[in-house]
View 1 (cartoon, rainbow, N blue to C red):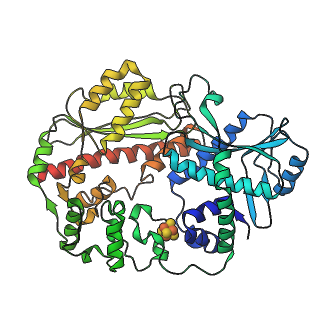
View 2: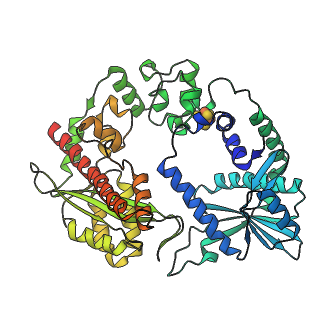
View 3: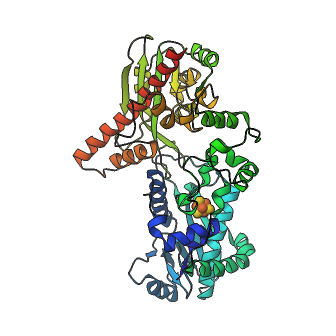
Length: 497
Ligand code: SF4
C-alpha cells in the first residue's frame, strides 16, 4: 500500500478514520458528501486551475502513467509542470506546481490552497507545513532537485476590480524554513502511518472522539462507538468546550442524558437541557417571551437571505469568499390576526446582483416595523457587506439592520426549552416541534448549502432549460418556507402568552 499525502493528513488527524477509509470504504463513505463539502472540493479545483496562470506555459500531467510522464518532464527540466505525480515504494504524491529555477538548477514547489490568509492562520499554517513536508520528502527520496517550497493562497485583503488581478489575489509565501523544521518528524510519521494503514488489522475499541462534543465527530463515530446512543451526553450544549466534564461522564459510563447525576457540575443552560430531557418536560418562561414579543413592532417583516460564497471573487468589489446575496424571501404581517403576505426576489444571471437585490428590498420591505430574522448576524453581516460595496444604499441598509430582531434569541436564551429541541437552536430543530405541519423534509432543497450549490449551477448554465426553471422554483419554495417558518414560530409564541 502506498501512502498518499491525503491519507497521511487524515491519519494525522485520526488514525482510525484513515484506516476505515482504506479498509472499510463502505463505512467511511456511507454518507454521501454534503453539498457544503462538495462545494469546498469544487472551489479547490477551480483555484488550482486558476493559480496555474501565475506560472503560465506549463505542462499538465494527466496521462494514465502519470509518474512516468512526470519523470520525463523532470529529466528534461521542463520549466513549469502542473500536477506532477511522484511515487516511491511506499509513498505517492501529486504536487500542484513545479517551476524550474535556471539559476539554482532546482525546482521550486508551489502548493495551492483555496484558503484565505486571515482565517485560523496558525492552525492552517501547521497543517500546510505537514502537507508540503510530505511532498518534499517524497521528491527528496526520488532525488528531484528542490529549491524553495511555497504556499499559494488567497490574499483576504484583495478587492477585485473590473478584472481579476492574480498577482494581487494570491499570496506566495515561502514555507521552506517551516518545512525543514518538521521534516524529520514528518519522515518518522510517514513510516508509522504507512505501516499502520497497510495493516489489515482493524484498530480496536471506541475512538478518541468519545470524549469530544458531537460537532467534532466524523461520520464513522457510530460505527466505532455502537454503545453510544444517537442523542447522548455528547449533545449537551457546548459540552465539547469542557472536555473534563465529558471525560468524567464517559469514564463513569454515563452515555444517556437521562443518567447524568443531579449534582454533576454543568452550566445553567446545560443543566436546563438535561433537566428537560430527564423529566421529558417543556419549560416556558412566559414573562420573558412576553417581554421579547413586546419589542416587536408592526408591521412585522420576516426576512431571510440566500447567498453563495465564491472563493474566486466574481465581481468588482468582492474579496475571496465574500457572499453573493442572490435571493430573499419576505413574509409581511400587517395585522396580528391576519395571514402574512409573501414577497420575494431571486437573481439568476451571472453578474453582480447587489443593485437589483437592494432595489427589490427597498421596494418590498416595509419602511417601518420590526424585521425578524433567525440568527441575525448572518443577514446583518450581509447588509453591512452590501452597504460597503454600495455606499449609496448605506442609509437604507443601516436602517434595516437597526430594526432587526433575532427570533432565535428566544431559544438560545432558553425562554423556551423543549426536550425535542435536543439543545439545538437551529430553525431546522425548532420548527418540526412547534409547527409540525410545516416541514423541510418534503422539499427538494432542504438546507442553505444545497441552495447555494443550486444557484451556482443555475448561473453557470449547468442545467438544461427545464431543470433551470425547476431549480429556481425549488429555491423559491425553500426560502419561502424559511420565512413562513419564522412567522409560524412567532405565532406559536404569541398564542402562548
Ligand atoms: S469520530 Fe473522531 S476519533 Fe472517531 S473515527 Fe471519527 S474522527 Fe476519529
